[in-house]
Image (cartoon, rainbow, N blue to C red; front, side, top):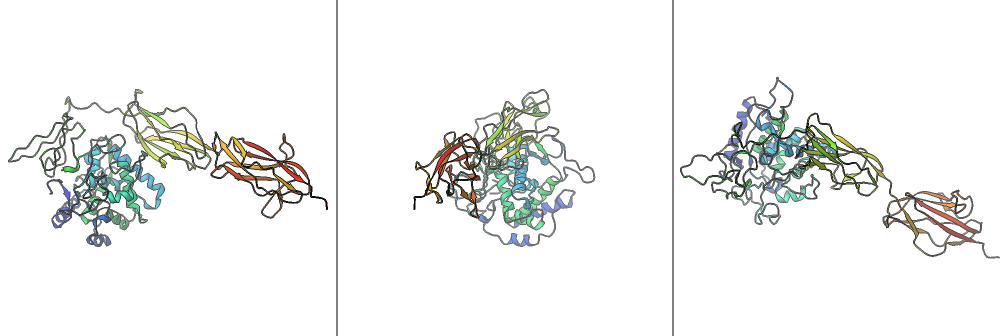
Length: 573
């Protein structure tokens, strides 16, 4: 079984010794493996062996590669992070994967500020669970190019977890399997799954969704991850194993020393991909040479053969690890005709939208924020990750419900944010677009939300409003507000007893409303239509003056309705 999954680790005495030896060797070197020596309650908790269903991954096997013994930023030499394209290969995190971790950190900084989730912790877990989504093998939206599945959790060497999703996520209707770059078992994903990229789906195979879900999971139970005890507890809750805790903490410290972004698909592949990584790699890196064997097997497919299907696990095909404990292959030499051309470099981003970003409260903005990424020559740059953010004192959100999300530029270099849904708070705010590229300034759109409006008012009844002098009107008055033919809820309105149809002066006699103390009022402000666009006026009273009077109702947006109130003299004694 271990051959199938390369250097995946399962719990047991042998693997414990292997991991302990590796950690000890790392700590003895100058590597950033300084894991605190005392686990305290965490060790006891790890030995409790709770059911696998209580963890995010179902205690599925995980990768045990450790960071290189040379730190990306050597102590006492420099505090600067390694430049893009330099430093140990392991320090490079694929662009979309890194953006997903940082987006999750930002989102949780807003929703759960007390958690203090660092993106480096997500990177450490992502490295251990899937090798950063198999070296960043994701599409433009952050979804893995092929499923990342853990072994079948059928109790043979691993936990025994019966199917909980009817195979919807893992393709197995008998047992569960850990799914996606953060390796959630389906039952856990059903609880913690997120839609972080705003596409309306909660997909464990999408790095943005999975990273935010992992962050939410780590932060639950009011944990503060800046505290060592809470940090350890959170990691153990993800996969309940002391070896797992030590490995994640080692990577966590390694990434805290410094890292850099590399293009998607060019990250270091985890050793022994096994059946969790079917299909040939989309990158130009040649297929690793299989190890010597006394019995020759079929040759692995060439990367240029797009029609080749991945071999079944255990068949000796590309689904098997190339070298026991190996970690990838040698890049092509300089001058190789198959080497791709250098990727264009973004020098600036510019606005492409010209419309006014204005919407009425509760409605959707018609204009969308859009930017184009260009190089030094002004040519469009494709596959650039753009971060869109709503900034300011507002309750407006993108239609996905998020205030921060990312989009990737297309062939024309353009990335467009989803529509913005206005809330009830009026005023201005900013839609900001930026890219995570040094010396490239972001751009901003100014947006504003106006008050809800009505352009039509009608009475809801046809009865004449009459009363005897000194009495109250028998019928209460209500009106219906509409805007462009639809009901207009939440619209502000006023009701005033006026002196004449062509004037706006307030009467000092005649019909009146009452305030909270029972005093006469002939003007009411701060009225608002209900969810059906209806405005129900309070009771109206008549004083001793008989005659015909006018009541005017006005709404935000200019809708006006004037009605007559008739007061008759009391009958003669």
